[in-house]
Amino acid sequence: MRIEIQTIDEFGNFFLENENSEILLLYGGAGSGKSYSTAIWLLEKALKERNKRFLITRKTLPSLKVSCLQLFRELLSKYNLSYEFNKSELEMVINTNQILFKSLDNADKIKSAEFNYIWAEEATELTHQDYLQLRLRLRRKNDLNNQIIATFNPIDQFHWLKTKVLDREKVSSFQSNYKMNPFLSREYIEQLEGLAEVDENYYRIYALGEWGVLQNLIYSNWDVVNDFPENYDEVIYGLDFGYVNPTALVEVRIKENEAWIQELIYQSHLTNSDLIELLKSRVSKDTPIYADSAEPQRIDEIYKAGFNIYPANKDIKFGINKVKEYKLHILEDSTNTIKEIRSYKWREDKEGRILEEPVKFNDHAMDAMRYAVASKENSLVDAFIL
Image (cartoon, rainbow, N blue to C red; front, top):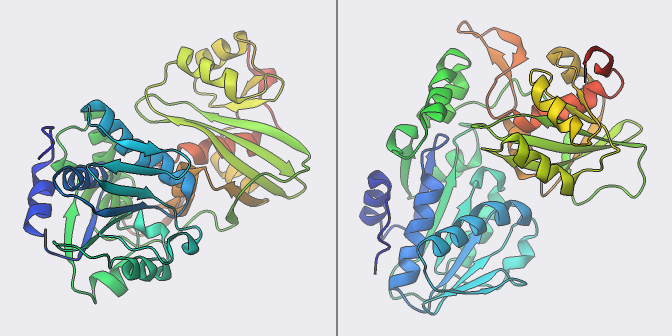
């Protein structure tokens, strides 16, 4: 049985041609459709095979829930496909097949388990030891061939996925880019193509889907933590407006020279009315919000809705230097913030000179974080007429 939905031909052909391959590496640019196409492939397997065990994994559980699990549930709902779901165990049953959603922040979660099919999403988040543990789990008896699929952006040509897997192991690989995906919006395509004039490395990675070099990173002063501290000195919010691009809201809790960051909103196509409704359930109206000062009308509307909102200090160099004064602790459920900070870098010109400005791509949470930290001691509220 096949799911009668629109698919991307290049991916469908690759999966069918490599159905007997044990290791599939799908790497490519942003918006190429690799994650969506992988989900479709695995759902088709679940519908036509029986008594198989699937593992869908990412490094952290929060990131897994808001990406792969959400994608699977949306597809199953959209096409009215029947399944059982154990919410506490994050386990689906489809046509006698068991699909487990488990993170790899603790490798013990999958020890002693055996699977027929494994999908590692955003595989660059994983360590080589994580990957080896997954390979050990790919040993359940199968009348067909067991298979592991890794999907990722090729952000660094020195990453272990290239040097230890792609270059050394017997794998089937597929490089993709946005041109293969007929479902992308014109606005997003223009943004990707515009990277050619912004940063050559980002253009190679996120537009062409080619291996890049991870260098000139802006922040190294960060780690990932489970929760906020029990005590802190102050709380502030940073808000970066978007529509086609995501609107990003982060909460920042500060204690001396440390800052804890949690992503509260990261969503595209939010009108201001939509945003205000979300703010009502996610922020305290007494706590200051520092927002993109290029959108005074949106700030004014949110202020009139009863929120303590101010225009942010948008001086980029000043803001980045202020953020660097803190040891940053990003909460593990802030998946987009973590992904952004991993590759947030200074621009280079075509002669390779490093410029004192960041690449303007995948930086929405970075802007929101900077607005909060840079503005808390130097609010522009007096210059803003409410």
